[in-house]
Length: 169
Image: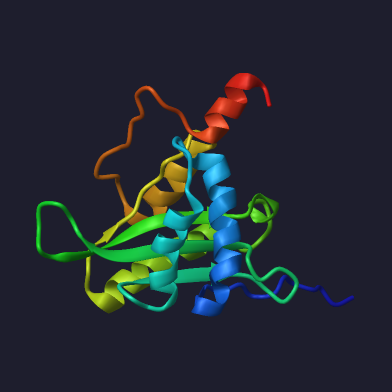
């Protein structure tokens, strides 16, 4: 009997043709993680330029059956206190239907982010803003990036998944 293996997953660079699929993922991510009301137009303003490789890049995992299993959106920005460019991760999201699937999609996005940072020779700023499985996500990021350089805290707000858990939905 021949053992079949899952197809090799890879992160591909998104293009403007991917805008609808990436927006779909962004809206799913917002429904899960936002702590303020998302505005689709503002999401589009952050997503479209890097799909055009305009001061950013979008990595996408998918296949012929589902081309949008997850994405990472990164922008080249200047922090408020410097004139130097850095790569700022805006979002890493794996569709819930693929989180338990083989292939390590979140890890692949981390590797894509590191490779992008290395190739561009720019520092990468990447983090986790979530109340769902946060400890597991932190462990994954520590394996990929080393010890954290800080933490995020919310006061007078909570992510959508934390509100749902509190409300029992």
